[in-house]
Amino acid sequence: MFKKYIDYSFFINPLGEYFKWLTKKTYYQIKYWGSHLRIGYKSKISNSGFGKYNRISDDVIVTNSVLGDFTYVSNGSVILEAEIGKFCSIGPNVKIAPGKHPTSIIVSTHPAIYSNSSFFLKNFSSTDKHDPYRKVTIGNDVWICANVIISDGVTIGDGAVIAANSVVSKNVEPYSIVGGVPAKHIKYRFEQNQIEYLLNNKWWEKDFNWLEKNASALWDINDYVKLVN
Image 1 (tube, rainbow, N blue to C red):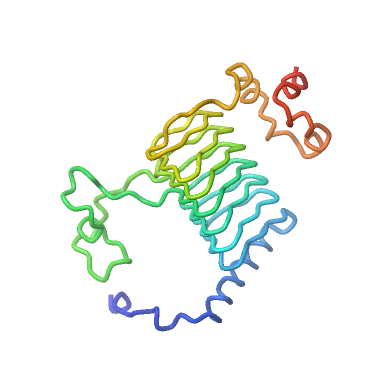
Image 2: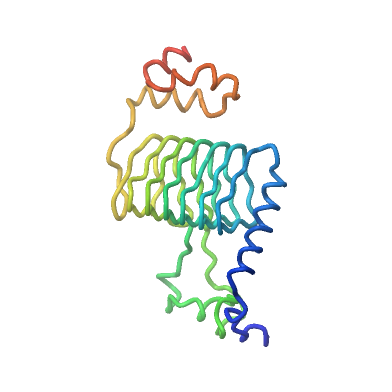
């Protein structure tokens, strides 16, 4: 209990922080040796898994999450409690599953009242009375633009695009472009029959040899439909 009242910020120094980052970076890049994982400066990774050819830029936090092949995360993003598919593009300063406070039933929105979080010097509950479903599920080939916030528990379908500065509080359909606060459907990227082709054929599941041979067909939706038929 006494440890809770120690102000550990007195012991933080740039050299110590550098070695903490270097140790974690080395651990993950050795663990995924051969998968070409890259972790940028001062990024913090914990309890997370990766596919192949992932790039994590500088000052990123990834916790309790899984990233599929080729998915990258740009500077300053925070990803918590997320399962993310392949070939996703995550822009700078994106926040995924940042946490929810109760807004009904429980009188106060302050966690010291309803949880036993170690973050606070004093709590008024020995157990957590608010335990929302936090996991965010993001499909494949999803583009999340800069400064987007994705609320806990949201599912985003394959091929979707989230416009910059949006707040996503509801599920997003495959190949839908959404934007705004809160984010709303703007349009679909392709015609419905083309979307069905993409969802049925799942180009992101093809092996690397197929992608190297047929990547040019992905430059035009009409060429892709012809290829798979």
